[in-house]
Image (cartoon, rainbow, N blue to C red; front, top):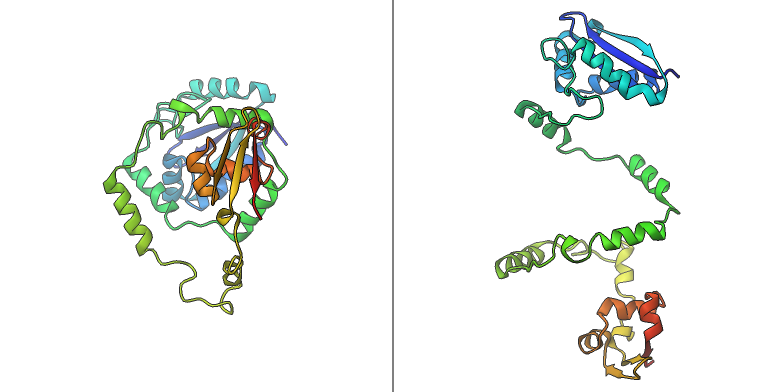
Length: 261
């Protein structure tokens, strides 16, 4: 595994591409695969590859260095060869650290758009991603950052209200959308049987419930959780979390909920 700077040379026009990698051999294989699949992110190199063919391209290692030197050495070779000049090379940016300032051409945008249309991940890829994420949990610090990042004016929906026209369109779309279980029976899909789980049973939402403020002894009573949320300080979701003992410490220490069986 070699770490360093490499260049790709087009023998037809002598244009070059300068790059760097911690694993040069793997990076070259990546270039080859994406160019062959016509999905390379550099449109100029991709166009030349398709025009002249891969036999007209040469890959060379021009310097071996340490990982921490990669960006500085890449910048050195980019400045020396001027590979970001369209008459000389294929590089998009003047800077080895980013492509800041570079803008895709309309042709490149259209080509990238076509490549993405209709693309779906395979079941194997999805299952691998799910398996990789199993058992992973956010740290308390990360959870707090996510929470505070969406509070008040930081929330993209802050101060916004759905207008009546949009609400009507949403409702029409909802009513016109065919339900997944329409016309299906238990024999067609095993999920249908689960839909009738509460049939003949009394749900928590339909039972009388009482919320008690443990600090002030104030009591709120109603026939259902929905109704209780309308008159008490807690929302519907907070009340349900309190029932399942999943409410935050602040809520669980202050309130107690009683469901009449």
